[in-house]
Image (cartoon, rainbow, N blue to C red):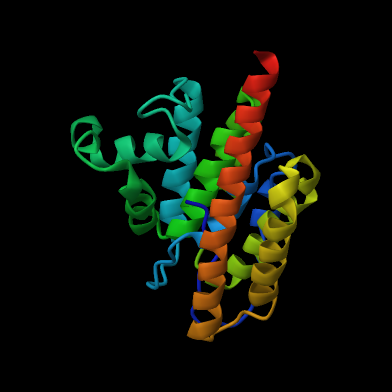
Length: 229
């Protein structure tokens, strides 16, 4: 289910050096894909990447490319999955639910779970040549000894703006409500809202908007099938 609502703990705003260099420019358009990160569960523990962790991360990324292991769409060929296999070993990795992959890498590398989910979403969305380049570029751009949680709101805002910029391609009978929801959630991220009630209300709206959008897509598909018959 599409969720656009996650509360971020209060934190001091800082710049995000390095990560901007790896910023994706042409991620495949999808309202759900670009909004998913804004609903990612944030891990409250603050982890700071060490120089040794970054060096190991870059080495792994290069090895993934050199050995042609990055194969999104396969069980252990995704960007995040490749790292999990390196960290746990192939046998143990098969015993872990893929929903925990990002958390495993974040704990091992000193990053944030939501950031690893962003990485996987972007790399798995791109054509081969772009995903190969960004898999390594992302590792190289990770800042050392810096808390990345203050970047969360700004990254969510950018993803939501990517989604809304493609709203003309969405089903007409769900477009207005979905755009309105994205604007409301964007406002919460802009002011880094801390009120639980505001986020709860947005969550309820998000679930309602998702149902409207899902119904609209099904109706459009059914109408197209009838037209072809």
